[in-house]
Length: 59
Image (cartoon, rainbow, N blue to C red; front, side, top):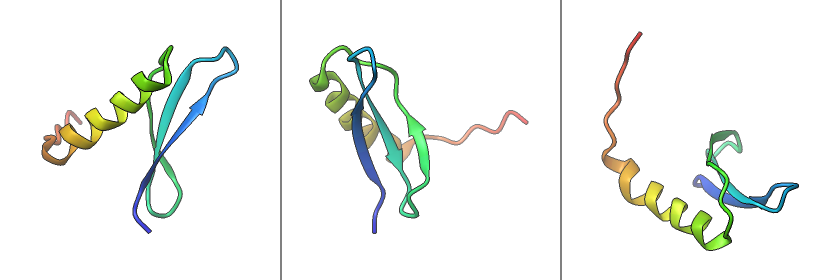
């Protein structure tokens, strides 16, 4: 199974999403969004920008 994005709603009514790895582990939690459409746009942004993202090791 591939990873998946899961949209949820916080107690205060704001939306956020989590990215889960193929093993079900949560590997990313977004910021809070006032509108569900904004959370969906955030998911699209991650999908679009992440494949070429550089890895920076500051250790």
